[in-house]
Image (tube, rainbow, N blue to C red; front, side, top):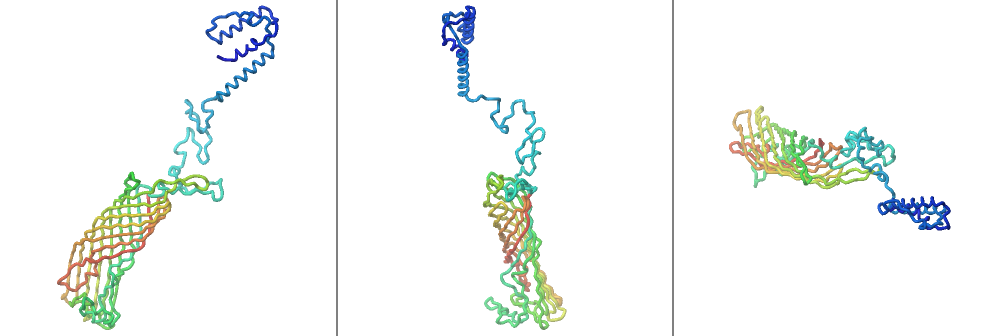
Length: 506
């Protein structure tokens, strides 16, 4: 029950100061008014107007103005205390919430959006924000325009770091291509091979498998026709890879299929030797076996060429870095950055290699002027097999350095042909075609470093080495024993050199 009306009449009940000098009619009206108040406040206890005995208030009742004022002040103070205890009065819904955190009220969806925008955020168009309100580059957390300055801030705080994360810099896209220029040095034999000398002693048979004819103690000349085992030397080739991202598994590894082609190099070397006197060049016994050869010639020349081509189709699984880290720029903003770490990759695939060689040996004026001879040897090795590989690299935000190895067993279908011809007559001429099937091994290793120029382009450079075993090399087929011969497949050329190129992702 509200206390204010009762407090209003407390002074009237408590103040008895003598006689009340009003007329009986006014006293009667006072009794009726007091009864009505009690009736309204009790709502049901007093159901009708009742009269109050004037003696209940006193015949001589007096209420002064100061008493009424004191009662009013006490009522106001009591109401204020009650309101303070109940807490501050709530205004409209949302009045205590900051404007940027207010939820829209029902029926206000169509109202215009606020005109104020946070710094660096474009003002909303009519109807609110849209995807077109932000530049496309911001969706990828990288500003491709390169404008990372803040015009209102000066000094070292004027630029932000580029976004170098696993999603913006490293292995992004659905396709990738790698192109390299490779300069390789080729070694086909540990020792040099001698084919002629201006000394008749080279025709002497070996003693205890030692050719005394080329022993420095027995040679009488330094005119020797030699094919170097460390040559033909260096030559440039091209290597290209085209790959496609298939999917990313639950272990955060990329599965790709790629095709790689390598070739274009042609290693070659040439030698020419003339005797001081006519008909002074002789072929060693280990090559002609005492048969008709180029002995007694005046001039001899050799030209040796070799080429290598490779094609492979591989399935590769490459791990990726973990979650990106958040790095704060000097200006106080945050950006994503890759967590540097180690990555592994594995591959399995099919590979085909072709190693072809040509050895041309000519002799002039064999005992008789105009009596010449030519010896042409050609070999071809077709290798096909299954290879496996693995790689391990350290990946940072802008660069990487890693090693890789791959190898496998190959079926080698080796073929060789030899044509020996003397212009004087047909004695000793030969035309041989030989073949051999061998199991060969091809192993390849390399070190590669990369620098990410842009999110889609990387520069790479490295060192590569490869060995091919059990192949037929042309210099190993030279023999003047034409009635018994076989294809020699004991060759094992070794290639090594430097490479540089680019990688593209799209």
